[in-house]
Length: 373
Image (cartoon, rainbow, N blue to C red; front, side, top):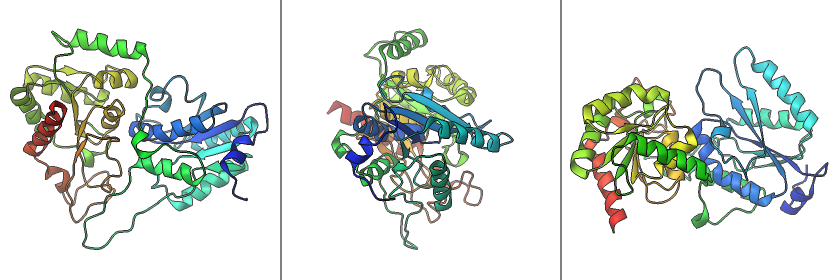
């Protein structure tokens, strides 16, 4: 199929309104880092009908993209299919029939860059079989990174910038590097929900109170800093930096949050209480976020809250760093870095355990000093 220019892609349609299918899957962080690319697509096709397609993994507790992305102005419609389990094949067939019937003009292919080449080939063949003839974002996918034996892994571009560069390769205009952001377009209602919760949960809440968001959870065991270190860190953030801690996360983080609050003698638990978007509005009230490489970290970055991210070395440096400026990433280079493991047994999580409470506390001090200068 000949390569089309941006104007040719924008002009191609089979009905009165161009219909574009955006394919992106993953967890909370995967959705958030796609925001700059999604806004670039919306700006490029302001009159088009954008449908967001995601996969559903039964039992994994993923946050649906429709609970994360702006309610208005970005995505017009949502589609979901069951990715695995007894309903996987049936769900895929139902999806095929739906896509075939709706006659999409263009596919925006925003899969994560680590997607295996065989899976990419299979995806594109499937979408083409539904009648979609034009694809954006399928060029420049980097399924693996080159590495030099015995050398530390080099820093790579963030997933968010990678998605934008793929759009650029398909002739889609993208913003300059200093104008990119994960714009959640929070509503006044969502902001008010967050403020109401803060006032109800924090005695004497006011803008003068210095809040710190703490994210102790994570989907992968290898990315979780030891709980006892979070407990000590919280105590020192309170006693040495006069910060008021709020624990963020999902329902699974509630037990450890209660443990922390009992030990600290103060604090609040937003985990499992606030929805994703009100949680983002609450994070905007915090002076900084400190915690694991999780969706919560990316949520904090999306509302311009500086992050101190505690990273394992399972991924390459920079790949999933919090987006934007003012953040500090704590990551240790070890011989086994880039392992991509979810559970580390052989090395006993030596990379993330090499980050001490003092290391994190010093990073927090640096962030706070930069806000005062």
